[in-house]
Length: 402
Image 1: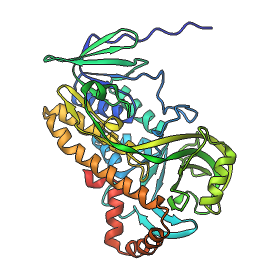
Image 2 (image 1 turned 120 degrees about the vertical axis):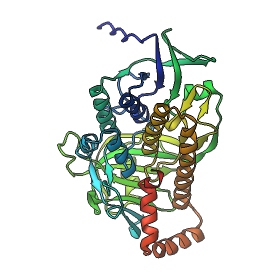
Image 3 (image 1 turned 90 degrees about the vertical axis):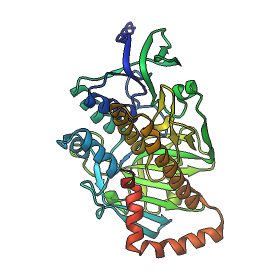
């Protein structure tokens, strides 16, 4: 057996230590690199959790949609447009979001009328988003220090000391927790994480299938059994994000197996997505979702971003997008020397996103026959009002958070 490679050495100190190299941490590091601020980006994984289709991370952070506001942020990070263009080239632009109850169409939310240079939702696996951000970071001279698991964070009047599982220490002026729901940095800061968990479990699966609506839309299906989202994915390894028969399925299930198999996913879609014929299962997982927001985004020299600051239902595909925008906003606040402005701007966004996704989830999963009847009567009426369709599209695209 080959000996493990030695870890790349950590510097003794830096200006900003960023814990967690997912999309949030990468966006923050890119912003700091562009502003000429010294940073160290650490991650406990030997390689990115989303760096390949076969990654076995098995967590709900496997995002599949990049919204318009996030693509605008990439354009602000790289005004040439090359950064967003690279990601768009790896994904599938989708122009509409449809809501159904079984086979019945209730509402169509179009994205092609959005006032943005990116009037669509881009379907791209998280590993592609991470790969594009990391390539840009390396082009600017930065990189990720991995695998370094941060086990302790202490702060004093002059700075922050981070200690790793292997005993190394790193001194920084500030430390940022972009290290997920179970954030070490948030724990060290003593910041509460207010909220609760949903009763249902969620199933996440990447499949190949034939499906009548095809790869032109993202579909949210209501039903007495629960919420189901079906979204197209580019063919793995395809150039230009070609459209095929690959889809991401996210569904609430009262009690799902830890690793849903092909037979389980087929039964699920036979019940909830009439016309879907599943051929193969590439990857699946079960997880439980919380809806929580950190009580504060800052405690002295410690700051939070992404899932360390907020977690919520995957309805609407808001999580990774909100996190990338957190990273960008925090980087700008650090560059401008106005750190307090970060929480003032971004925590209200998280509260709004959590409230929106919670409403979507509860409306979709109600088991009351009366409430389902009211929902299915009212929603088509509201969807016929252009102003309301536009407002919902703008909210989902996160363009209200500019």
